[in-house]
Amino acid sequence: MDHSNHIRLAATELTPAILEGATVYGADDHKVGKVDHVHGSGAGSQAIIDVGGFLGIGAKPVAVALTDLEFMRDEDGDVHAVTSWTKDQLKDMPEHRH
Image (cartoon, rainbow, N blue to C red; front, side, top):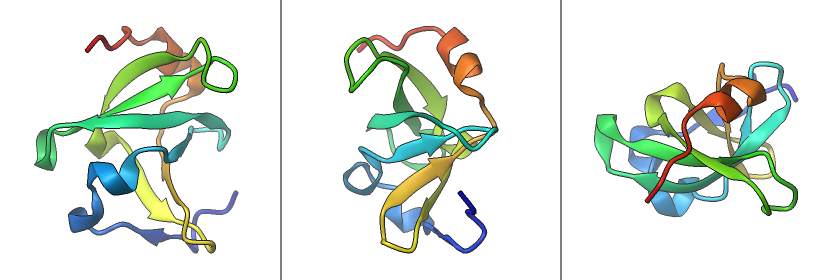
């Protein structure tokens, strides 16, 4: 997917209501997970990404700094994120526990 024409979200749009459910694309531009929820607000926020699994079953939640994700809207207005992490790197992270 070519993200160059996608509109980056403004800092004021980085809210749980907008980010939750966003697809996350990794370094190889493959889908690596979905944002399940967001912890905190501002610069120290974390996105909890469900990685792996099938149709949401068996997915492992991992915490990633919001600053490690670049959120944007595609031509249809759908929000997604791009990160330099690969799916394997995310799977190797410790599981996030509530």
